[in-house]
Length: 556
Image (cartoon, rainbow, N blue to C red; front, side):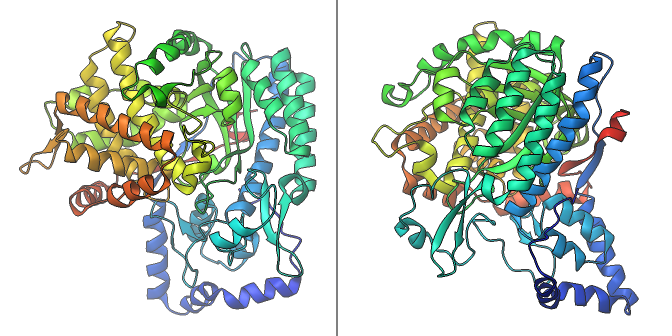
């Protein structure tokens, strides 16, 4: 939804952009050339077909009258995050849209929050648009890394500041709450209004503290309050949260929001697993120095139906599970909360995972791909973010600071492989039901699903690394006759152990060069894998989902 109105630009600026955007001229001239217009229509029809449209609904019969009043307010606040993320990702979305006449092109721009394809390594899909800046709109496009490092600005690495230039062309920082003053004041007021209807005291406290955080950029008190919530049925994850969009340094957090309804029955089934975190931490396959931190155990594992996505989490490939807060101090003190977005997860499994498994998993192992295993793999991926180490062992600061733009991809890779490690350990303890083979084969099918997100996604890069690493270790084989894959259970376990050790060591050492080399060597799609992905595309298997969502869809 395009709601951000860039009134800061003058009519002259709009005219300048209009003149610069030759894609508009191309589309206009094509109106006189039916064949060219047909070609453009076909191009965007094909691009849009990579997404399956899903109605985002949930069972609302269990919510109270006050909760029904809260939901529209929370969705309105979430929609503001959409506007803020547009600015962070691109900077001039309305002006870009004004130059485009093709409706399918507009839809695809909206899905990507800009003219760069998030499923194709951020390649531009509009003519005359250049490469996406690595720093998105968080930094001046002409700023170099060297200039940034030399700048004497105390808050330049803050997650909540923009880097801009003053009238003398010098770098300055602008806090989010200053840059977005009017809109964060509005979102703050909406959260306060919603809090007035909250029956749960924990939710009320969180909403009020989050409302205050929008005005100050001090989010830790609200993060702590969010961790203390236990009995709330409604929830909202909202604010500047993930740093994926900043591919220059990985410092800047982008705005997003999820509006959620807790599935109380499913959540009750997941409660017991958080207690195992300290034991699993001590059993990690790495030297003691790399697991010396004790993960917080005041953590929840819950299942939710998500009823609204906005901003970063809604761009390109959609998030189906959440592990937050990202604040390392909060993680060590309280742990994290892991939210499984069950309805979105089910949609991806039905529309994407099943067709992929039918095409690429060997017939004798296909039976092992099921939703329970997919749910568990996704859940323990999020749990595994709490394992390992948050601070380097050699005074290089946090892992995130030391590994910079590569931190997110390595962290996602860690969570994937340690999630499988956790399932293996808990299965041996009798805490997880089902055949262990189910989780491993479903994990393999999941690699094909996620690698299609491309290198523009931290999850996509993580899956490329793991596919190539596992292939080198003989964890799977491909039959030439069928083009289908079979896993070697023992070798896959060995690869899981060794990759876990490698990643945890790289993180603990803050080894920026080592991680950069790993991404360069293995964060790529080789020809054979690309051929398989082309088969999936030819079969019209969607890459991801896009939502019909909002008050009307919910029937409120």
